[in-house]
Structures are given as C-alpha cells and as structure tokens.
Length: 391
Image (cartoon, rainbow, N blue to C red; front, side, top):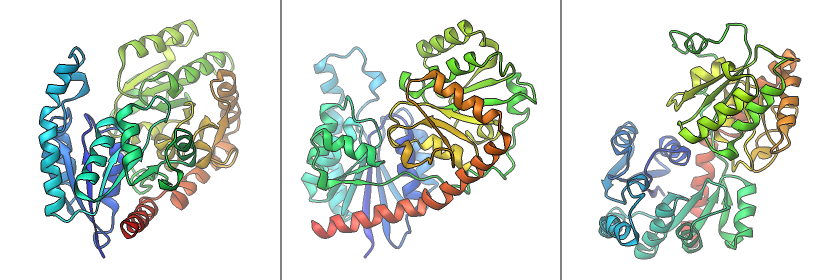
C-alpha cells in the first residue's frame, strides 16, 4: 500500500531541518510514499521554496499563509502577534480539508513551534498520524513545541542522544524513534570537478600551499567557531601559515566577536568569512581539515557532508556526533569547550598527512555505508507503516 504523506512547513527560512525534509521528499520511492506539501506563503523564502518543490516531480505542493516571519514581528505586543497569526488559523481549517480530500495518512513537520503545534492540531482535527521531527537541542524548547510533541502520535529524533534528552524532558519514550539524517554522497563527491573561478583560495587571498581549517555553521556561541579561532591562535607559531574559513549566515554581533578574538590572537589576517553559501562543496573541496567543535550537536549534518567529501573531521565527542564518528578511525573527537583539545587535534592531524588521508577515505566510506538517503527513507517509511497500522 502506498502511504499518503503530507509535509507541513511553516518555517520562515530553509534551514537544515527543512533541507532534511526536502531530501526525504526527493528520495522516497514513489510506489511506497506519495508526497504532498503545504508550505508557508508568508515565509521569507517562499519564492525559493516554490522553485525547490517544483523541481521534485512526484511532489504535490500548495501554499497557505501559515504565519509571518518571526523577524517581521519583533516589536509587536501579544495582541499584535495574535492578529498577525490570524490568517494561519483559517489556513489550518483549509489544511485539514486538504488532508481529508487527499486521504492523507501521515502529517510530518519539524520541531519549530508553529510546525510542532500545527501538525499535532492537524492530526487531532483529521485523525491522521502526526509526526514531529526533532532536529534541535532539547534544552530551551518553547511551550508550543513541547505541547506539539506531547500531543503528536510520534516524535522522530535525529540521534539516540536527542531521544534520551526528550525522554528526560517528559516525552513518552514509546513514541520516540531515532532516525539518523543522511547525505547524498553522489552529490557530495570530492572526485567531481567544482567550477570555482577564481579558486576559493584566490578569492580570499590564501596561499596555494597554506593549510585551511574550515567550519560550516550558523554563527552561534555553541557551534564552536570561538574554539577554532582560539586553537589556531595557540598554533600561530607552530603552523604560521594555517588559515581559517568560517561559513555561515552573517550575524553582525557574533562576527564582531570572532574578529576581535582573531585580532587578539594575532591571526586576524588568516581568518576569513565566507558568509552563507547555498553550495558549500567548492569550499569543502579546498579545506584540509573540517573543524566543527560544537557543543552537544544533535546530529551534525555539516559534519557528515564534510566526511562525504573525504575530509578529516575534528568534532566534540558529545551529543549525536559519537553516533557518526569512531575516534581515530573516521574522525577525531575532542573534549567539549576546550580550545586546547581542538588545538591538539589540529596539530596531530596536520603533522600526519597519511593519517589525514586514511581518515578522510574512511570517513567517506562511513557515509556511504551508514548515512545514505535511501537508508533514511527506508527507516522513515517503516515507521510510518507501523504508526498507520497501530492507529
């Protein structure tokens, strides 16, 4: 029996969580899952989302006003915000009619407040199985997200670590399932030619023979950019030609802090900011090390992308990362919040080119063996079938 599935997307922008859902839509076997999407016409990236969804041939999509972007409501009081979300209440009724019309059996959304609460309401209104997909750290969850997860039929966690945290937050363990994320290793393929003219190094004034340690992450204190900058500052005499490339959407106050740390560490001219890149592969291709010392990373999608690109990865041995990396084999795990541990890891790998080569090769094999889109889709499809049968 083909499962009829609806993805509900109220998100303002296409973050990593929505990217995961787009990957699922793309890779489901059409004879196993028929995919429908309701996305937010008020989102900041609604035009881009229309293009992305139109490019997936077996997806039926529609757009409804599901809430204005949070950035558009910073000075609104409670009444103003309530009025701003008024259209989304009517849209929920339309979404419920859509579910009934198309015989939707499963409604699936991210863990963001509107997604989680709306998907559970839709499940209640229509009798469909409701799934909240938990991609983020559990600490500091909003009330709408917690309510949505408690009322949902099931919660998908991106790692056993997140599953344990959810149980600790009072979510019923019997309804939480671990489903690891996936990366398309045919897309993240280091053997493909990446057209970048001038080259990344030429664009940023990095010498051709200089090693580059890079990170791809939004600018956030827990993502580890500070530890990376601090580690390179500690190594400025041992590796005087080591450069840093930081990719991620620019957050002015955070960037100012990173620049201050680089200046104080004497490496300001060797720290580069590439901003948000829709396609990170040309950058990953030129990195010698991928250093991502984030704290309690829920899964680490950027880490797996770098591994697929055959890059040796340095990351913290906390959160979901140890479910991906075997220390010393296909990556290097370090202590959390430790600039010294990151510096030691960088020095160890840069001093041993053969270890880096072997680690990068094994990293790509790990991705191809354990984190493929087809494996993820098979796991998700099996859970859907079980949930439908139980319902």
